[in-house]
Image 1 (cartoon, rainbow, N blue to C red):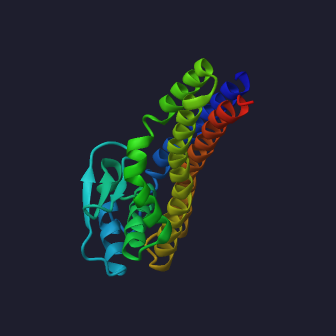
Image 2: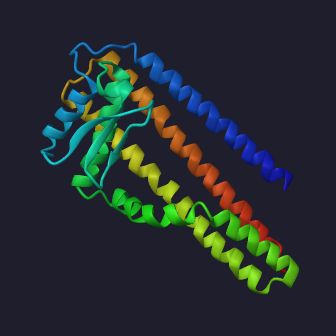
Length: 231
């Protein structure tokens, strides 16, 4: 038990450090202004046009680092620090989010898989830990039996969130790759600006990696509680 808390604490610390580093990188590269003078919204629209995507809109969304692509209404949502800004960080984020739109348009298999998991995870993620915990409590009181199978059901529910976090990795890395390739091929950014965009996206990807590791660690811990406690 103590080892688990140490592990989770370490992952939480690493997650905080990576998140803080990402914000620091974004702030730093927000001061590297683009020579072409294009805003994040303009870059996003040009990337969509270059890929022949006409049914996706670029809109502004409140908050910081709240950028995302919504496949349901086909919108590239850019935060206030990206939509109207004209710097390397904004270019990187805008192109990355359009990368998801390109994935959607091209039926990228990993994005398709993740989209199918969204409704399942939205239902199971919030209750899975409680189901496992409740099953363990019933199992301890009733000598395994029904409690054990309830806990197993909770593990299955929890595994969907872990699978989702793992599938998210290739989706995010691929979107960044598409963004950087396009930025370079179309000469949207200079060499210095490109280096900043690449570094910013690298740190953004690491947040998803840490989240995936944390999800795996949590699933393994509860699996050990369920299966390790069985005679």
